[in-house]
Every structure is written in C-alpha cells, then in structure tokens.
Length: 301
Image 1: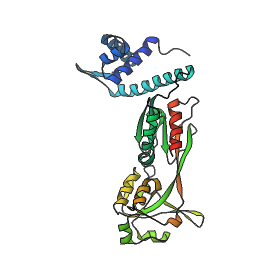
Image 2: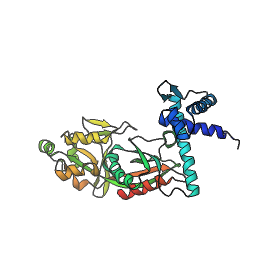
Image 3: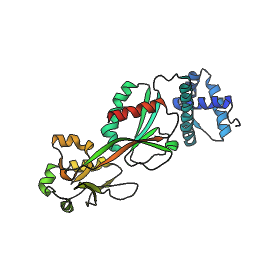
Image 4: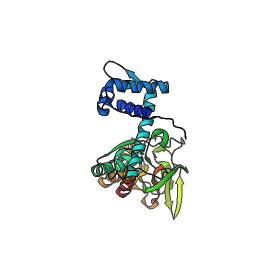
C-alpha cells in the first residue's frame, strides 16, 4: 500500500481540526505548542494540496467554508477512530470517553432515551452525547452516527439490529370527546369517529390501526380529517385537546391515562405492539462508549 499522507500532512490535518474547533489559529497554536504563523502555514499547505479553501479569514476570527465544514467532519471522525484504535490496542481506555452521536425517534426520544441520558452521563462523565431527534433513517457513514433507534428497521447486511423493547399500542381520547361522540365498543364503531391520522414520511400513507380480535391480528384503515407526518407527538397533542381518537404507544400517554386526561378505549381488542431496535454498523471493534451506551439503554428500558 502506497503512502498517501506523510507525517507533515497528518500534522496539518490535526492542526486544521484544532483550528476549526477553536475557530482561531492562535488558540490552536497554544494547544499545539506552536506559533500562530506556523499553524497558518500548515493549513495553507493543506489547502494547496486539496485545492480547496477551508477557512474564511478576517482580522478577528476564522470560520469554515462549506467545503471546510464537510472536510472537518470527516477528519474529526478519522482522528477519533485512530485514537480509539490506539487506546483499544494499548488497553488504556479503562473509562469510556469521546463523542457519541445517536439518532432516535421523537416519541421514544422524549419519553425514554433523553431521560435515560441523565443517568448515563452521571456514570460516564467523559462521554459527550449528541442526539438527533428524527424519524428518518440515517446514513451512518455519511452522517457520522454511532447508532440509531428505530421502530422500522430496513434490512441491511451491513447493520446490526438489537431489540430494545416491544411498545404496546392503545387507543385513547379525552373524556370530553367521548362524552360528545360516544365510546366505541366495536371496530365497526370507528367509522363514526374522528380518527387522527399519522402519515409515514417514507410512504405518504396513513398508518393503519392494529388490533387483536379473537386471537387474530387485524389491521384497520381508519378515517379522519386531521393528519400529521414526521412527528407522532403532534398527534398526541391533538388528542389531548379533544380532536378525536388516537392509536399511539402506551409509553407516550401513560401519565395522561394515570391522571385521567385521556381514557383508553377498545381495551379488549388491544395487545398489539411494535418493536423498537438499536441499529448500528457491524464492526469488529466497537468503541467502548458505544458498547456501554447500548447496555445502559437496554437496561433502562
């Protein structure tokens, strides 16, 4: 394998990352024990090699160009992986450390994952956690995520999926709505109700409601004049304000049910659930911070 990066070039990449993080050549120079002029020359060599301008310079500060920002993200990940490989090889990573990037759906994120982060950070204070709340699938390589939590896992031979929990589904409404529209007793009654519709961004179609009747799983297409997409919590807000019936995860509305703000209906047809899984790239050497977070999240569920 031919060498692509000499020692000087690798040093320039490290100085570039320091300057990008500090937004200052002077601060980067202080961290590296060099002069600001030496840092500036090093980054100039890097820009000459790439034929790309990495920084917009002014008399007071520097900022990354669009190309510089994209390059910084990739360089930071590469340097982090090198550091992790060295720590794993030498056995010096006795304590999890570094940045952990995770993507979680809004529902489970607000109700379960974000609360679990408090105890995780208390136990592993050297791990910095960056959370993206999103219901869309992520590109682990391009987006730089360590793991994701998803309700619908796309088949992919390059990804590992571990079951996190089975989330029970319930149908709920406010007492005021049920007093006005009546309490549904059978599946056929749903046709006379305002059923709040959640549209999947990936398909553009409303998600069918699911039930268990006489031991058989049944999917029911409901109808309603109010729809939301992307964020299921929007549907919960509508339901809390009396907009209609909603089928959602029990973990989202358990406090509402306990305090009487919402009422569960069609309990005898319940029992259906959807799985949530932790998804991450298959790799022989998983960073310690990722491994302990997966263990913590599974235990917290």
